[in-house]
Amino acid sequence: MKEFEVVNRIVKYFSGAPNVINSTDWTLRRSAERFAAFTKFGNVAVHSTVKNRSAKVTVYVGSDAVRLKTLNPQQTEIMNNLPNTLASVEEYIKRAPFVRINRMMGNNDEFSPNCNFFVSIQRPEMIRLAYMTWATLFPVRADGEPKQYIVYIPEWQETERQILVFPEISTTIVLGSDYYGESKKGFLRMAMWNAKQQGMLGLHAGSKILKAKGSDGRIRKYGMLIFGMSGTGKTTHTCHTHDLNEEDEGIEILQDDVVFLKKDGSAYGSERGFYLKTEGLDQVTQPIIYKAAISRDAIFENVMIDYEGNLYFEDDTLTSNGRGIMMREDLSPYISNTINLPPINDMDGLIIAFITRRHTVVPLAAKLTPEQAAAVFMIGESIETSAGDPKRAGESIREVGTNPFIIGDKSYEGNWFYDFVKRNEGKVHCYQLNTGGLGEIIEKQPNGTKVMKRKVQRVEILEMSSIIRGIVRGTNTWGKDKYWNLEVPTSVQGMDLSKYDVEKFYDVDDIIKQVSELRCERVEYIEKFNTLDKATINAAKTM
Image (cartoon, rainbow, N blue to C red; front, side):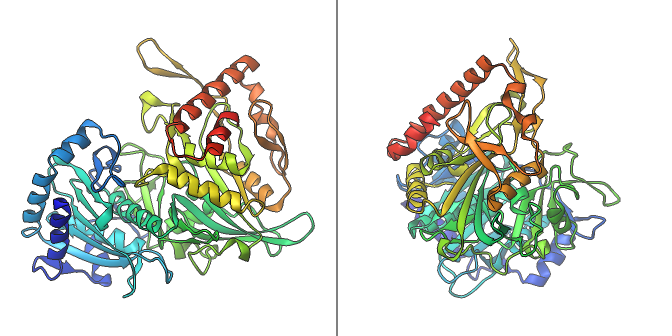
């Protein structure tokens, strides 16, 4: 492709160009701090103009294997103008000042992408993007492969903001955004594509190890993968002890966002810094994360800070998407000495938890068959919140694998996952966890607006933690749900399940109607994937 030639020339230009500074570790932080505010904890807070990822203006350029099947009008315009845009970028990079950093994603001998980041500092404060990227990744090794590139021009015209992704040459060009998430997800998206080419499956999931005492008194060691869309509790529960406080019990945190799963059940980690939503962060329910958040090396993005350096995690005046980069070392003593999850055969089993956030009739927890697990993976379900889009509050959101960053055939990912859990049946245990709650009633008005008639009975973090603790200790009891074809908990130590009885919130006819409507939505969604294993589709129809 002609576009590939231009992009390769752009990347090649940066090697030895006179307007490119190769930044060293110790200068990055000092330079970034000149344009940041200091919190009362001594760490830094920065603010971006763009407050979220620009998904609607992100395009994948290349062969049919990577291109998006349907484009919105903005994406269509971007593709039509692509030759002119790339020509402008190629000229611009020769004039603007740039900083380059070189870091490594992952820490293993098989798959550790070599990440090259070039950011324009025409706006000098954009040095922070280089610092934040540096902080999240590892020191580079000479043998790191494959090589991945991001070219970042934040000052590009706002009306022409776009994210150009070229998977087949491992390059992303970010134009007109100063949001760090484009860098983080740019490298991770590319790594997931490259991992797929090597037979692995890139997952939008946290990973940890749990050691729990069973009712027989024996300590068992489980790996755990926690799937979930942004803001559903993936990082919260990845970084939680679940009160596994008995002798020899405990947790080891590995990763909070993206891992690369292999057929033997091992999963390579990717990052040394965790980038998490700070909304609702507090010392009582999330003590491990809170401790890392107040450490000297934390970096806050778009979190409300006053002139005295006080932070307000609940204040969404500027955005509901406040973020923080926390160093993995600052989660000590709850971190593992590696970021990589060992193979299944080195443990007593692997627990896979799919976090969803529903507010009406979905059970708090469900034990899944391999077929149901594959269906839940494909459905990748959550809901729109009032913070995200008030007009769509309560409506379903679906992303295969809860992963908005999949490049290529999504059915392939579902079939890979189903094959994995089916082949390891008995060693891999899959669950769906609903971190939302039950009982919400939202009514649509004639003018299209939505009115909250009854708020959700929210499941507390510590209650969901009790469910997870019961799973690994084997102390939960399970039975068939009355309305769903699922195994659900009938008792959980340390938790009163009766307050989440769906019949306390709705009458029977209403429950049946809501369950039927949700099941139909799911089936309509999953049937779009015509190369998906039929067993997975059938599970969605019957569960």
